[in-house]
Amino acid sequence: MNKHPFESRLKKSFTISLDEIHKIIVNFHDEMQRGLEGKESSLKMLPAFVDTPGGDEEGRFIALDFGGTNFRVLQVALDGHGSARIERTKKYVIPKAVMHGTGTQLFNFIAQSIRNFSFIDRSESAKKKDLGFTFSFPMKQTNIANGILINWTKGFSATGVIGKNVVTLLRDSLKRSGMSRINVVALANDTVGTMAARSYKDPLCDVGVIFGTGTNACYREAIANITKLPRAARSRKNMVINIEWGNFNRLPFIPYDELLDRATNNPGKQRMEKMISGMYLGEIVRLILTDLIREKHIFARSKGKFAKGDFKTYHMSLIEADNSKNLSDIKEYLDGVGMLKTSLEERRLLKKICALVSQRAARISAAAISAVVTRMDPNLSSNHTVAVDGTLYEKYPRFRRTIMSALKEIHGRRSARIKVVRAKDGSGLGVAIVAAAAAAQH
Ligand code: ADP
Ligand code: MG
Image (cartoon, rainbow, N blue to C red):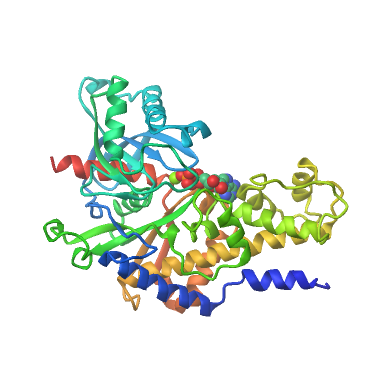
């Protein structure tokens, strides 16, 4: 098959070589170290004021999972022997008006959802209920039950929240809604919850990763290395660090990355997230398509157009999953959006473009995972479990496989020491474990 020059150009610009991966890892280590020392760094390296759980945490908790596309309320039961069970859960789509309104509206929405969920536990209905709050944005914490929002990510822009303690805002909204019997005992990032959910039953788990609307990770660090902490706070042996890796910026950017970044409401920020996560991958493909359509390299016989935000990561997933001879699912999708009379050749090209964008995302993800694990264990001399949650990781065809093969490229046979597992619903489940550990200390 005769390739057009633009095809090889695209391929070249989206390919991340092994050399580039190694460079990313070196730079990532450097930024991690600087972040821990409190120097200027694209990695905030936020102390989470919690260690991995012991496995004996028990009780029944309310968990909130807020920080992306959906808001979830869960009732979680912990048996004290490594088994965490979701007894009930409900999902609420976060309205655009809530993402972009006032902080009061946002926390009222959360309180109203909790009221709607109505925690059921008849035997102890009069008693206080302990709640764990997953709030997946960069926060400065000084203990497990507080956190000041540093900045919004993932398109959020609610006013009056940055610089405030989100636990106070949550408590106030619960009080306003007549639910003061609910006790907010723990605040955690979704990565921290995901890692806790796995380490509850797996002591080898020391990394938590999210590939969803956004992307981020946490890991277990020796307290002695967190030199930016005041000496008085350095009491435990290990502490979880929320890396906020979505903001990592020492990466081989290409013009499409700059184009995408400039059109967001947080230009210059979350540059790695913008190359990897569900909120952005579809938009990168759309930018490429817009160029190719303008240059009449694709869909020249169709009148259709893709407007900003029309092409979702979900569509890429669907396109890459189409293995039919005629690429009929792709055709159905394109027909559905008015992109009629496409040729098989054009559909193949579309699928290839999606693969270039998603594989780049997965390879950068692998580099970041490798960097985090080798920060703890440079020679991979022991086993590590990396717990992952998020719909992109769960649903995107070959995303996991591409990460695994990149890890193999980087580490050879030693890559077997890095076990990557799915911690489904970990971000909600895990915060219940964090809450149990916090409640036990009272
Ligand atoms: P959150 O990160 O908001 O907690 P999820 O982990 O569920 O939520 O991730 C939601 C993101 O997953 C959406 O922004 C969307 O981009 C992406 N997504 C949804 N469906 C699919 C799919 N089938 N394949 C790949 N990505 C998807
Ligand atoms: Mg999530």
